[in-house]
Image (cartoon, rainbow, N blue to C red):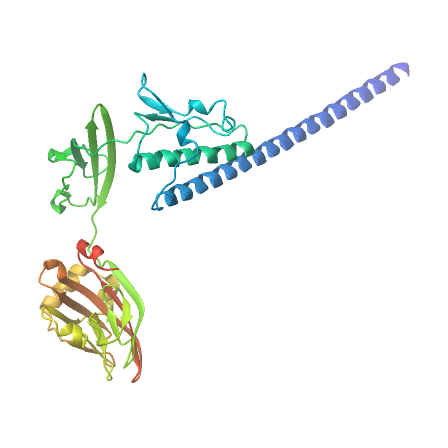
Length: 367
């Protein structure tokens, strides 16, 4: 009987120890979980604060140089030049009222007297003061040191190589060497059949410094550069004409009305614009499928094979047209495009959608 009691007591002790251990184990896990969540929230808070601060600095920096006259920072007078190192710094801020609210600043060369270099230093000093505000909110933040040196216009050469595919070897573009001001030729003949991506690498070296930049060019079927929707031309109104380059709504008899509507809902070149020597616009019917595809090369071929007309009657089919607009003697003054008649209000207006721009130079003239 006594042995039985001992066994029961031992069993009860073991049960109590297990329950106590399990309770403490769970409590420890809970504490670890709560601590982790607290640290996670703290880290996320710091990330949010840092992101907001960086965004603020970006906005401030972008706007800084928009001012016609940039005033010197109060810290500018504290900059000192170190002739032994040929740089300037803000060490003299120590012992002044700024000591606890600014970090240091180091710049190569002498202290700028005027011009954009002086403005850049002023921006850095303004940023320096902004850092102090974020430091108060995040006292354990790491400071970043960045040293920028302005250099003159690049006068060296640029080594240019290319490869038609990520796994292909680099080969020279032309002779492989270009002046810093040269244009780099990109030829469709460089692309192998079935390979639509060309990688280019540019390496510039001067005074022991080397900088490398890469980019890629992807070939694709040429399409019109711009699309304008919901364009309404109203008969005998201030909106009876349209400048196709700017998509501005103007009077039909404006000197800039490249497209205009008359009382019969017929589209044609504006009377004043069309009367100028060298100006013209003509139309050839096309299909919905070709309009949707928007291929500029196909449109130009179809226009050349068609019979151009100087008007479009919006009241009758078809609803899709190719147009050729000429506004000068230069090759870049010739604009191809496509028009889709989306709807009309009898005797009142026509609404169209159009695509325009078939040369990269048109990116400069079409707004």
